[in-house]
Length: 161
Image 1: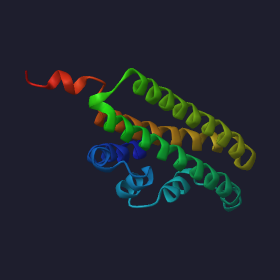
Image 2: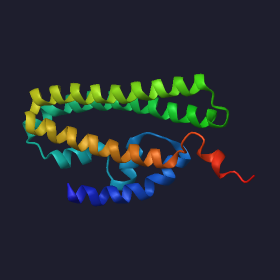
Image 3: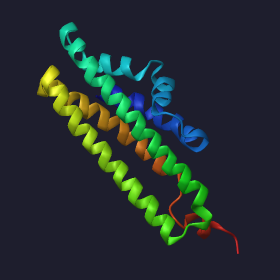
């Protein structure tokens, strides 16, 4: 995990400009930092036997399909926030907050569902190992996104009067 942590420090540096310029798929960040696809990174980290890898592939593919959908929703919410930042109303703030909270809950539900499926396929230790890696990656990405977008009203405080 320490080796992965060093690599992710590099990701933080490169992700900041990524988050500001084009909120594309998380996968592109992983590929640009690691020089390999996320599935290759997961495969290397998980270090499963051939039989386990075969059993895990379907679980992982289903997870990635759902995660990408949630990621698209997350980036749509960020873009909606950016588009409405200067004219944010109570109603729009409420809509964005509720949708963001739902997106976070949907990620947690996906982790739980995937853990249970992976546990059946590759055992609890390996399932926990995958969830630990995935939550770690998503937390780093979420942190960088949060650093790149202003708090409500933050830009107003920086205006020169």
